[in-house]
Image (cartoon, rainbow, N blue to C red; front, side, top):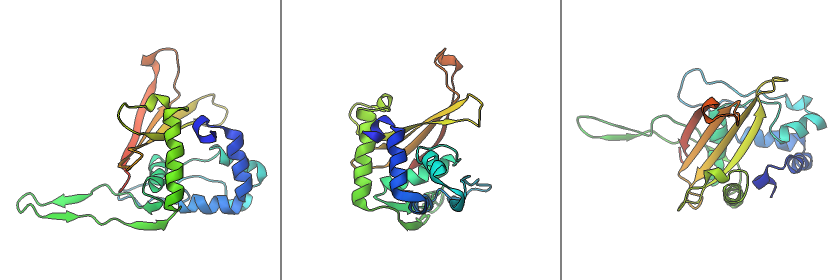
Length: 208
């Protein structure tokens, strides 16, 4: 219910139960504290308060997704770890290279970075993500004939700017994830459809 309805007080309570040390250990496992290592130049890193400076208030704020910054590829990589049955994989741009003359195929190797969560836990999280789309805040992502999971998000675009960033990170199909897609809306408004500024931040295969 908490994930389905984006219930911040529940997320705060979970953060308190985990504690700063455990919470940051999972941030590290999900590769949210470091660059993903994607084979592109100039990759940016996330911005988090140092673990030793995170007190009860800071942990509560971080627990529901505020007062830190991550890149779209970091978020997609983290969600892909869930879709991959709990295994973290370094994102890649090229899957394989095909020689235009000989038609020889060279696969770009997949780099695994260990287990983040168990397969059982990943299946439970995917099931909860499916309820977000079927019953919760992500109902607009429903597609007939497909089992889709995801999570909506709303964050502040800077401090005291009165501007917001909304997003949806989706996984499909739930029974055998193949695609993770992140869509971000910057400062959306309900006034007119044409006044909305939107961008598709990235889309990525789960088994990168």
